[in-house]
Image (cartoon, rainbow, N blue to C red; front, top):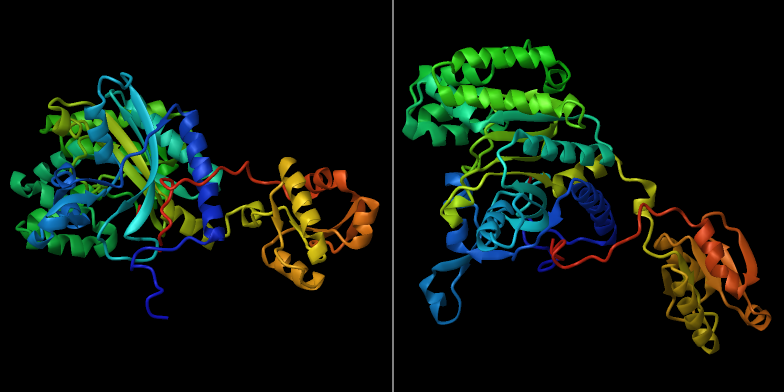
Length: 475
């Protein structure tokens, strides 16, 4: 029907969608907080100069700009923009509130972002990110804690086939120098290399040549960035420390004339050493070709992916970004889980617990007649006081119709207040799952339903506007 579709690349979230989202978000939030991260929220839009120039040539093209309003509308100029990610707003916040934040500031943020990208399966123009960032330390402990937290989240959600691809921007720069890439072409080359999984090896070489590299230099880039691993998958690499050591040795020889590359290799070795014994340890695999397209990364970069599926999130160290606002560099590292991709994959794999699919109501109170409406509403009020989620059918319809409505909403119990039940001070309770029905004293209904309903995954939390927009279908 014309006019009813949401804007392309956005989605409406129906009740079942929201229950799945809240289930994932609760687990994400719980793990983040157990790792010592604190919540933060920022506005949906920023001053346009806050965002421009932070994401590289590709990112700048995907920023949703907001035109000036009122008398300036005709100019066609933009002064605001929807936030592209949660990292640049965080850097602005750190600069703005530097005297109010602790020395080591660890924050998590779960909010929507917007990108003027081409929509695809699991990729939207409006989507939510689940970010953690640690500000104030250059220690590799920061990277390990972040990778441990996101690994624990994915394991808790039921993922067993993910791997952590790990690299360093300084190592990438050194490898490109070793391959003969001119300094002016380093940034464009990284943008191309970041597309390797989308366009393939030959596509990367062709695009590097189009960007101005000699064919032998483009081929040398690929040789250095994809060392011989005996055709092992990343899952096999993650479980084979000796093979990861072999990759490091190969890279060490290639970047020996480049001091920053050697520093990067030592940093990667430190991360892996410290990660031993954490949930991230058996998932780590060095990947010299991992580029991460955003230009603000300065050190370690990481990406979590499922083989054959793609990325579920990524991040890295960005020690210079806060300095763009503050005037002095502040060390920082972060990671973003892609909520949309995770939910799509969990839905396709049927990974959500049965309780997540349950309706939002524990018991429906029927209306026997117009004369009994007040009694039904009063019963519902008492049941809500006992902690139950209660709905009242609004009309005195046939009981069969009321039962059918309850069943369509996955309500497990129905309360019946007929004339005889009211006269005896009782309520008839029907279990729609088994078909059994029993009469009981009115004051026992709440405890009976509470004892026999399906266990919830967790106490539900109210949904806030900033948690997820009520609009419509990264990382």
